[in-house]
Image 1: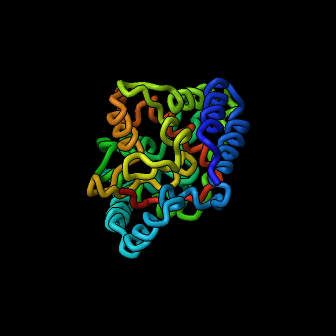
Image 2: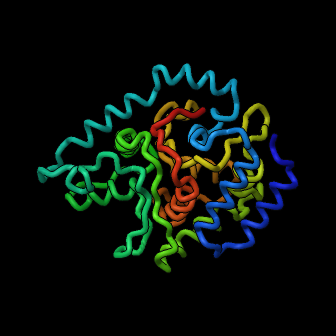
Length: 277
């Protein structure tokens, strides 16, 4: 049985009032909140978003997964990934283990560059290091590449190192956390308004997905888009819905947000690419 709304609001206020809390403590409180909200839901099921908590949606999703619309993106990404750059090198030369089964380790804090490195950013860094132009961060080839790399990590558990071992990493994490809980835009909503405070409740005919597990399934094929898109494309879409300021995909703001959000999904299995409405 779900906890009453009053309980969830009190917890939300507690979390947002301690922006410099220890990340490990944040993670424990975050999981405890969703455990209280969905006491019978197995932990790993949070990777499936709404399909884990809405039986009708789950049945429709399972039918779609028989012939998933993102399969073409995986195949296209594999071809791109294995193709050579003009200098004869390829993406394989830029990543450990030839880039296979590493997606669950991103994003991470790069001490030398002093910034959060997402997998999308790393792919374009690889291209530029090899004399190629960067790709658009919202859709197209970058989404195909990310689909293929995520697919090679399917079933592996998100393993984001705690940012508390480096002062600037902790600062980036806290900026991402503050972004997630800060109300903004004409509607005065935050990301947490929907996905922490009201996760699992209805808005019109739709069930709001819980925040826990939000980082596990990207990229996604959205029926609304009719194609595969990236997490940062979704960040932009949410900002538009809140009528809030839009930031550049893979800019510092959204990378810090991804850092926080992915850390909050630590230990959940990756199941990207995936399908969402």
